[in-house]
Length: 193
Image (tube, rainbow, N blue to C red):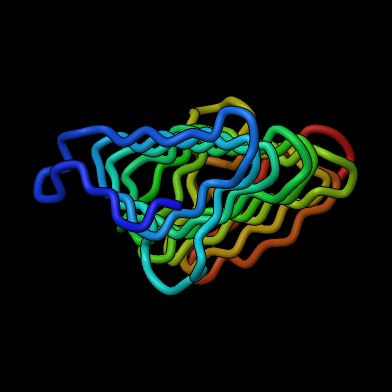
């Protein structure tokens, strides 16, 4: 359990690394750092979802066997990966969140930019019937210029001012639901939709 871990809170200039090698979960109450890295043989969770940011950092990498559920304030989510069975949920309060990669082996993905844009490079929700849900106060944007952004059985995009508006979100999904708010919705899908 990480109750309060801070690595130079004022400037976020130091890194934080936490892992459980053989078994056990990582429970995060409060972690602040430049680059935060979690590796869990179980899950990575917080005791109070939606209450406040559990992780405040410039970048974060989180890899867990059985699920991730964190509230964050990040510039970049470098990697959030669930390698076994479990869901992957990151709710962020930064003005704009860049997601390099978010994956599950067998589970749903929920990514939310609660205060601005969500810029997505790669989101892969593995497993039969898995759903990738992207939510943004403002825009959901293509973060990798032409390569596939979302792979899942179902893709749900909820945005206040556009989904791929002006630069389509590339996907490989079978079902697509979207709310574009005040902006447009542009999707370039591979396969039958």
